[in-house]
Amino acid sequence: MDEVLLIPRFIRRIFMLFSLWFLCIPVGVICSTVNVSASSNSSSSSLKPKVINIGALFTLNSVIGRAAQPAIEAAIDDVNSNPNILNGVQLKLIVRDTNCSGFVGTMEALQLMESDVLVAIGSQSSGIAHVISHVVKELHVPLLSFGATDPTLSSVQYPYFIRTTHSDYFRMY
Image (cartoon, rainbow, N blue to C red):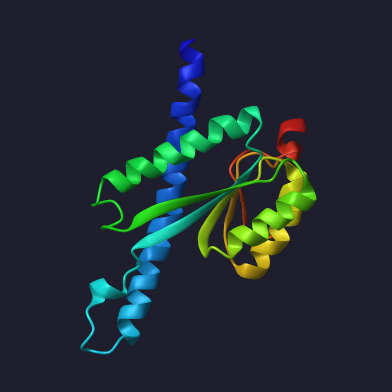
């Protein structure tokens, strides 16, 4: 029973670290870029984003989906509960169900990108990740995948695809 409880805690910490790592840098870049070009009579605090949207694409009705969603939500709650981490900026999670389908996953990814997400987490399968990688590549949105293990999903072909697990090539070797 203790092993079951450790998995969500582990996943929660990993997603929190990835969220902080990928979101702290863009917030600083966005704020410093806007502040340099802003007029002298506007304050820098009014130009900082109040909310950063994070997208999640996975099959909700699966073992991984049922574990990943509360883990990501808990990580976001941890970050949002401390105003010193992102300096008052709040993270908002937008979850889309890919339903383990390439077609549905593509449609959900496109709808998710309309929400101006800064980063997307998912998908949990390589087939859907292939399709979604084309979308995020064109829109320049990082895609953190914790389940896509196909070795052909490379950062050379998909520069915005970031694999957070080993590929099948590594596992087979």
